Length: 184
Image (cartoon, rainbow, N blue to C red; front, side):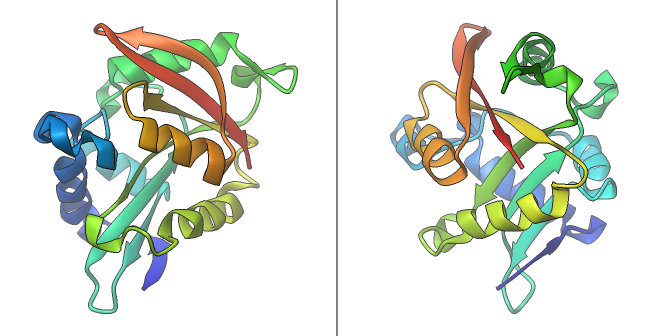
């Protein structure tokens, strides 16, 4: 297995992996395995990959088995920013981390992070964290992320393995989310 920056040829596999783990495409019985709440459009993947914001894990035969995104916050609605991302941008303007407003620091969005079910339990999440901390520590001071309140597996993973801190909760379309941050 290798972790590397994603390239445009990876985008179809990234989108397929995301679609397989999107809450709207899962049966409720599958939620306990973790899920994602945003299904990004092709334009977002083009932008994120083009800005060197996506790392992929690939097998020896080149199959994508996971990816992680760390990107600057979107500044244009046409980059696919969702109501959840807009809420996070608003929270970043008013929430502090270590006594400083997040919006006044060099901050990024972290996520999504997706690992194919066949590759889970092998340390890939920790590997992604190590690779991206090293890759982005000169570009960003901290990153923010969100986890759906009804996704305890992902909340546990981000707080224990990543060391992210829950700073606030917010609601979008009657769903509750946690707003978290961590330093690079």
